[in-house]
Length: 283
Image (cartoon, rainbow, N blue to C red; front, side, top):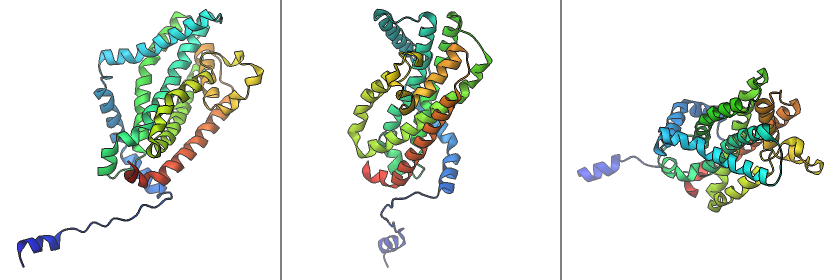
């Protein structure tokens, strides 16, 4: 027997099986996801470094961009005659920064699977790592703006109260909501690549339907349904209450925000996990 024949005979056999829909073993999946927690952090940090957000100027740009937008919106409000003064500007900047944490997570999360096609095609890992990493990146981009919010808070003479300790709770709920939307957007974008082109319009619509340019007290009674059907409404309203007004968030807002976050996370995770093994075929 020749060498070539021996080589062919000993070559490993690759077996390709058709993908199947359905949930994988959640215990094994979550264990695999947890074992890659360090990879998620390093992946996010490397992405930030690549985009120059690890430099002083990069970090400064993260702060300046939403601050300029807040100034433009505030000027617009003054032009159309909306009153509010320091409290109004504090509400606008605080909620706008948090709103962009959500939209950045969704926008980047939508492209997480398709832009990570090389990883998906050449590595075996839980694909949920990708939208989680993008949400972590959005959080890292948000954290420097908290310094600006603190400075604005002091400059405007806004109150410091013990109710501000609710901030981590609200931030955790917002992150959960952002991750849920990023997971859903990532799945949709695998099947419909043009879906990401709609995100800027959806983000702008969500901005107008959320208590950013206005407060919940200014909302017309005929539009009170927005406080229920808009998942971000109770979260942003609670954020403004504790950070700007110095009061405790409404219990109903916390329950509603938690309910929306859990429902969207369950829906998004189910859709993503049942389709995950098909991603390599689609991209």
